[in-house]
Amino acid sequence: MKVIGFANKFYTLWDVTEETKDLGNGHKYVVTHFAYIKNISFDKETAFSKYPGLDFDENLRGKTQSWDTEKEIWENVDTYRFGKFKYEKIGDHDIDYLAWYWDQILGDHKEYVGSVLKKHGYEIRTWGDNNQYLVDPKTIENEKKAMEAMNEMTEKLNSSDSFDICFDHNPDEDGYCRVDDILYHFQEVKENWYNGFPYYLPVLNDKSKRIKNKNIKVTKFNTRNHENGSLVVEILNFEIVK
Image 1 (cartoon, rainbow, N blue to C red):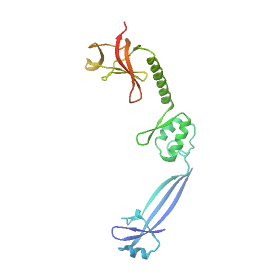
Image 2: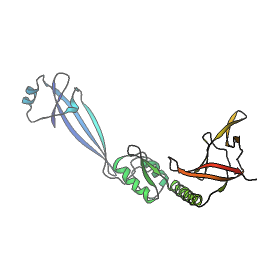
Image 3: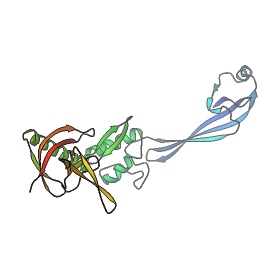
Image 4: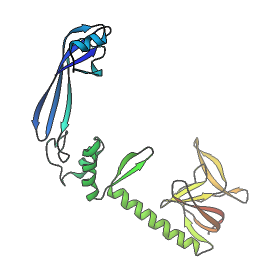
């Protein structure tokens, strides 16, 4: 097919042809050959009058040398396109590998692979500007257990004026201790040092209290939701149970 292009000064004549290479398994390459023929004219009207009916191809602007382009085409979405299973049908084997594969692909193929993963308990979630990420069944189950624990704790807190707890670690510099995905927050902590490293203790009646591995009775508290969705128990008063 003859078309007209434009170099730096001349309108140019080209022959553009396509060739399809069939690699099997629904996989093809379309090779487009752009063959430069000659300069036609400086003048646009003169060039198009010499070759009436020809289209102008913007891809040829500024070019006077022949070249080829290749476009990969897949006619199916249910076949691996690369990797150790290339050209094999996507099935129910090696789901962990399929989850990795999903993260490497785009378009309709990604949607199909995602539909297979969903049958195996995966979830596809969206964050930010339509960015997607995959969540595996184990993570989903852990999230479910954490939510159940949080709901159970919320019900327990709503029905009592106090509760007992034992922390196996000190709070962080902001006063937070995490237990079973629930954040317990001490209103005030004091920085201490041991062998060159800082650690933090909650303050009660202007004195630091060691709480690690000790039974604590929380006698005054309220609850709120953290920005990350966690339940926060604000510890307003507590005592060490001896």
